[in-house]
Length: 421
Image 1 (tube, rainbow, N blue to C red):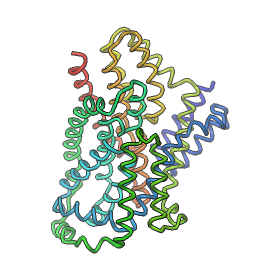
Image 2 (cartoon, helix red, strand yellow; image 1 turned 60 degrees about the vertical axis):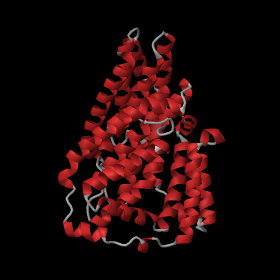
Image 3 (tube, helix red, strand yellow; image 1 turned 180 degrees about the vertical axis):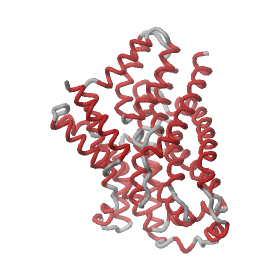
Image 4 (cartoon, helix red, strand yellow; image 1 turned 120 degrees about the vertical axis):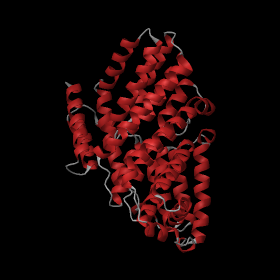
């Protein structure tokens, strides 16, 4: 009975999030509370289901980004981007996408989009064009870039821990295919958005002529903020060596920045996007109901039984099943459920490498399919909404579906040729 309740509530909530009859944060919260009231998840289980590391990481980075915004840094970077691209919208889109993908490989993709989305909003405002195409491309680029390294996306961290795979292993095995997928995605997005990115010549020239100096509003604060931000980003890179979680580093960075930049915490916390944080809380509880009801484990077991004894079928199926399920539910609980399945296959004598890399590719790249498929997607959508630009579920799906299918096809060929042929 619990499985039926969890499944129905999840499907109804998912449909409502897609069509958005009202705010999706309220939909997620109502659905999360409903599975608690109906007894699918108890209150202690619901609190335990919330990934507070993600919530606190987001909150800390939002504070850091808000203080950086006060200095005029995002305006300055935006103007540099306009100058570098000469105001050409396609060139600008590719420049922002490359920067996002590279940063996402060495930071986590959520941190990256919190820092890059404000720049995109400023750039597009100066050019007088909609930021939505640029933001969609940035989401896709962040998930692809995050696939390339151990620290780029949470599923990779989980897989690395379970399989005892280090940073160099992910870089050697996943970075090459991530680069290929990024190039293919960039070509697809140029073709898809070319007609929507027309900017009159006079407007481009006016944007290029803007002066850089006028945008830095507080240089002493900028200097202090950049030192703290640099230390925070370094902390993310070496968090395992330091024995600290990224959330702890983000909160430490936010706190130190408020102190050294003399920012009132009340003002800083007002800049936190609470809508995004509560959306995640509701979503975590809702997904936990599927875990508690055994639905996710049942799907994984069904897959394991069908693919048993055939390494090639197990590997390719794992890639596509991971991509599909990660597009619907958050890839963190899915990866946690899929890891024991892979360990079971390995115990049966199947080659470990192709299985682990297929799980990583599917879990990370599948997030590009829907607007709620990855944490970075939700963050970008809500930051855009706060700025007055709505990214609609089906609008994102139209582009995300093509990119995801192409990404999984490329991944299938790559895994087959490198590990199975």
